[in-house]
Image (cartoon, rainbow, N blue to C red; front, side):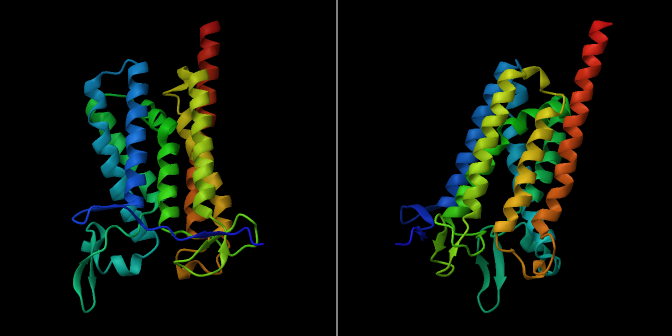
Length: 280
């Protein structure tokens, strides 16, 4: 008897007739709200004023959305979007024979979202007068829970599917084909949930490390290292990736892994200097 999981959920979580909410949008919202509440808790624990906290959500939301959208357009479909630049930022597409059609934001890239978030947080830190690395560390502590929710949304959409496999936990994505495949989205979601637990554990043990770059580096290292390995179980997203030793997702992950290691190394050196100076 086959143990494969047949997967074909309705992409709509709630349909009121005049308004429908898709699972993907719902999980995005759950992720953002979770980050908002957890960040609020961190700011209170660190005695950072409410006035400095309030603008953060909008900066993060816009930074992630714009960065993820531009990342997909420029990293994965540059030939199309560079000749249709308006469609990069609009949830509409000029479909031949149909004209402008609402499609939503069909392509979002996590690497672009990470870059967009970093730029948005730099602007936010300058505006409210906080140290940039302190902001990055706080956001890094809670980011994995949002990444987990987004990958669950991908699972509900049956997108970013894995390669065919005979593993007993394989999913048959009926909207794609009848082949049992690796649930790559679920692998990532589970990893990110574990990473959130790791971040929270270290924060509870070493709250003084916030601002050193340790949590930011740990977040980048864990998320993008896991991404490199999990990509081997996933189908390539674009045809040009066929035959490449590393696909686009893996290539784009390498700089983030290196940056993460650098930030953790820099953080440990800073702690050593502080301890030496205190003994002197």
